Figure (tube, rainbow, N blue to C red):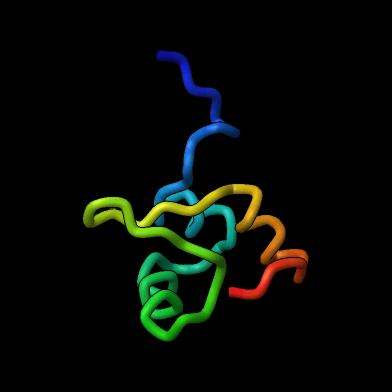
Amino acid sequence: MNISNMDRLWSVDDVSTYLGVPVKTLYQWKWRGEGPPVRKIGRHLRYDPAKVQAWVNGEVAA
């Protein structure tokens, strides 16, 4: 199976790097209901890259 980078969901580390914030901040945002939209898959947090980018641009509420 060949999955391009745009088709895969981002990990907490990916979003941390993209936004330039610590991983701990992303977990705090999720706990508070803030930050970019996130889904829990199993015990892992995953982000849709398009929704993270839309959140950065102010187009999506958390």
